[in-house]
Length: 538
Image 1 (cartoon, helix red, strand yellow):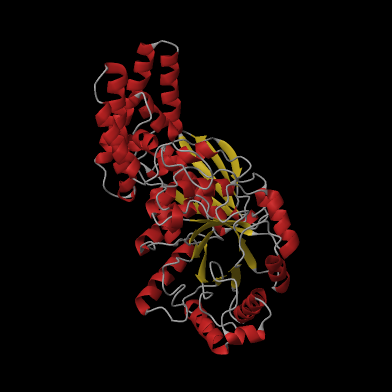
Image 2 (tube, rainbow, N blue to C red):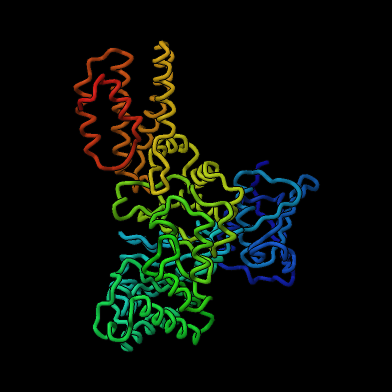
């Protein structure tokens, strides 16, 4: 069915035009236009009373009458309608409309991402774009905390200049339009004197500046700071760092309670481990239960997150953890890795034991979109989450159809991360098949397998070499090494299957390849080169 004319939208009388915001306009423009589809909307606040996060649930009733489609959306809250419209949008793009009734809604209550990495902050345009994108995958929370925004951390006492403040207001307003809570985080821990009233007045002044532009959710970050008190007034007033932190958090929360409907999230200094440290126990029992506490899990960048860890955290802090999940971030010592694989290693039942998860992003905004989409898919329904299926959907949402196969062959080498996923799944499989055929004495079969894979890799390299914008611009360092990888594979094939005298050339190329610190292929690539060389000498 080819659609060319406008979609017709009709709304219940009591709903009116209250949803005609930026987000509604954006989503409806994305829906493929059709004169044979009618979308009508009704709000029923009691419709999903038996489900968690009822206000974010929706039901679609799709019927075909006289070759025309009618889609009835029932929702309990604004976010439910937004997610329903995104679902219809995706159906229109795929031109697939499952007839009958379908009901959907998220399991995790807090779902989102944080710009909390070390490195160059995202541009304002990239931030706006990410808000829209994350919302389409069910995100309802964004935490603003770029380590290298000077007014967030180093210059926390100073108020934002007018131009920057206008941009933050636009971010907060856009987030609200897309059903997302925008949390502004401030990180005074590097230099604040906790005992100083003057310092606290500076903190309140900064909060008021942001409150005046409509921000109602705040984060107080005390991570990555020295574990001991530094200033003499602090040493005189407090017996420990945690005592100072409890005092600061409680005073900040009390101040926020005097403002309009404000919330507070805290990142403690001890934000990872078993969740049972003396610091966390004292902090959790010393601050109000409504204050959220970030926790990264058993490690700073946790390979896995399990429900028993969340239960331990709850037992010691009197609240469920809000996970600051350090994936797909690739800052610090990980900067040579590109974390493009799907989220793995998170418990399917974690939603019952945690307030939610907020995923820390990469400096590379375009690259972040693919792994973030898989993470948000997990947060929507962790019980049915399939990493590889989510990954393919993320690639399809971000890469042009004619580029997807080439991109997947390339991104096969961009999965190494704290999650202990491994690079080169496809390459390893194909080279193993090739070597198995060779070991079995079937050289022609080995050659056929290798040449088929090499041909696909060369086609991918040719396409990638022509791409310079968007995600490909961010991937340029990895693309450069990938092109050399494909060149080396071709030389290996000439040596193994054509008897070419190119071993010295191969040694030189492998030397250059190995000198490049960018993380790409797994050991299977080096092993294949060693087989071609017939030794281990390069």
